[in-house]
Length: 258
Image (cartoon, rainbow, N blue to C red; front, side, top):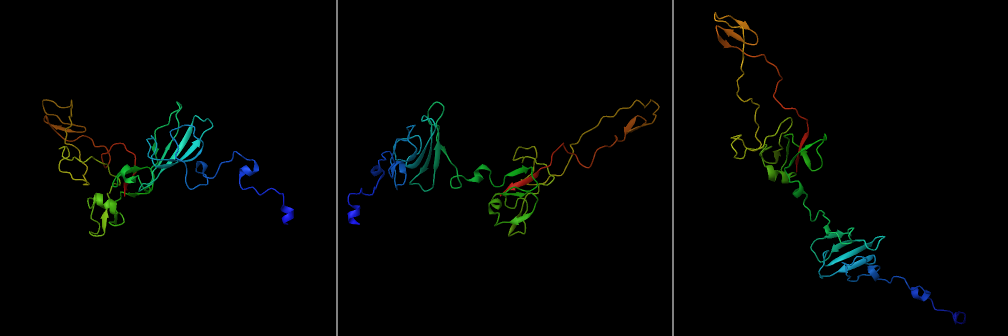
């Protein structure tokens, strides 16, 4: 065997041993290695790959791992950066404008750095077009619900719309078939109202003017929608309408954020 192998070329241990001189080495551009190079990431046209950014001045993200994404035109590129050494993850992205400059840095929001309640606070009412309350909402139907299961909502509205059983539940607003009116809150237009209170229907006091050409000096009687006796009128106009006074409207399902 020894004689048979004598004079044979040794087995190659690298691409160069086989005459391949343009291969990417392990660790180059962060590929296959445990670390990568700190690079001038502000340079548009870097080779695609993984880079690192230290504390040097940058419009992107200091102390981060960066993926540089080439484009078909080397004057354009995209970058994704993941911050390092922080208490929570931060991910930023940017691309290149038509004028050949980096776009402003944009941060990706996630459940660790974005409070959904900041966008739509607990206790917010919405007029929903569907037949069922969407996720995160309850129908405003006056139901008694758990003070612990819906603790965030209870912290906001408390027992304003009802105390439930007085200890473990509280009531949701009852908004079915109701119109809303802004709380007076000291303005003096709707005096004496408190938040969540019901107000019965009412028409503002008013007069109607009636006229007739059927009366005379002798005091004749004329009856139509009203009655006149001896020049002194009394009576009522004809009645029309339904069981309530309301504007034209469209029904929606009222829901509350919990």
